[in-house]
Length: 377
Image (cartoon, rainbow, N blue to C red; front, side, top):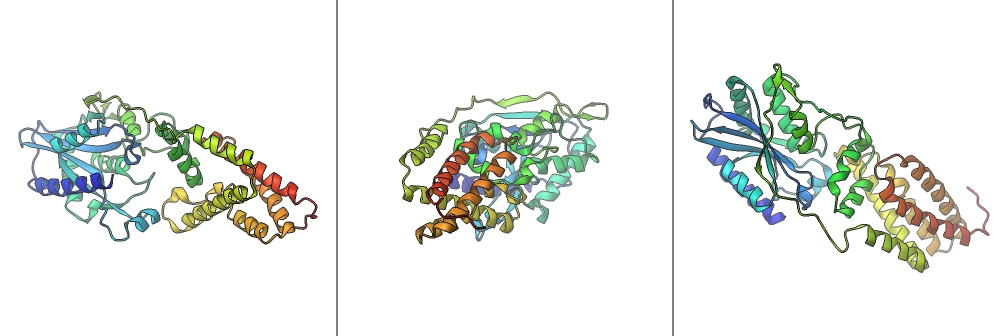
């Protein structure tokens, strides 16, 4: 993936030089076309949700360029820290259409096109605004998973150029962002589990605006502009049947098997190791919630399950302070019941339920083992 991203970055730089042959003042002919490209999902982590780009084609000018808001530089100093913190700079690049379609052919990902039914002056304004962004500091933006990504940037520049918020979400706006994301993880169990527990309250808000490529594709098909559909019927530029992800380990079975073994073996060392891992994860979630600019990570109530205080419980167990172990075990049992009730109507309830049950039984055993010591809170 890293090598591929570097290659795409170099291609983007080459394409940028190629695109500079067209200034933002280059006049488009009446035959020019502006369209939104929606790229299919893949099985790599970066491709799970698809991609959005804008194509400007003018056969009279010999122009066929794709503007892509999803580029970033792996050579950025402190790349990992910036990515985690949420201040990594993404930027727009321009590819020739031939290069763009070649990359998606190589990845075996479908590409769909929706040509915008707008007048030439509006096409010119979109083209000018794209180039203005491309050749200025505006080409950089701070990536946000929901609020600012390759799709939202396309929506923003189209609405800005058309002079109004014509493109808005059409369809179900009662689902949460978490519920909208869930189907995209089909065949990627641990990715689904990971995002379920690291995301906080923001993804439980109603998904009222477009943030995913196929949401934009579906909304464009229902958008009106000056008494007519904004986009023509979608056409297929590339089509590949998505290969169903399969893995001997990345599935429900290994997840349930591992948790089942922890319960069946019932070894003190294994139980305390399990609780320590949960506590360390909880500490990570809370730290990231304060440290990161990614709003999706803030206010993470999953820390009730992954409580950092579990590490303290293990510490008291090691020094054989049974009273404190009992107190913390009972306290966490209460937290766990409250957590389970709270998430009962949320999209990730079923996926974390085995974790809840396993943790509950371990804590119950620990509390029972130390029950002779009276509880004093």
